[in-house]
View: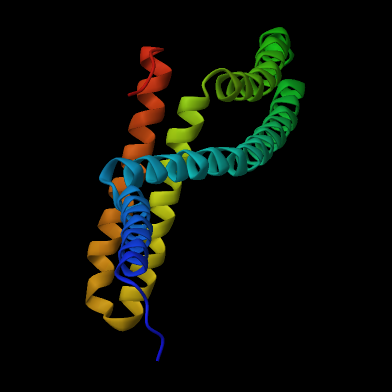
Length: 181
């Protein structure tokens, strides 16, 4: 056994108290609601930013695909119109103007979508949020439907509601021209 003097014991106790006080301060800082909320908000901002960046190329690709399909449809319509115009030459001039307008409309639609996404990152973020939420609802619905086929109707309704919300947000943005909250 080692014998220590009362002064040494007091010194050890004070050192232990100081370490415990530091540990308690650090623990209190870690579980502080303000600190937890700050870390959560920072994580959420990072996730939203990441989601926005990941959805931007998908939106651009989808826009490109839609634009291409619109051009193909316009080309098919143009061929049909040409056949009809050969049979009715008096309307050739009118049909020519309509064809030119349809072609330029497809190009300007694509440009408008790209400009709007670039000019309004908040809209792109909201679209991304709604899309992620809808995707989560669809996945959850699939899992529930596999476990209980009767639940698939309610999950489908939720997915439809989320899709309706997305369309509402996009329509509001297009019509109002204002920022979304």
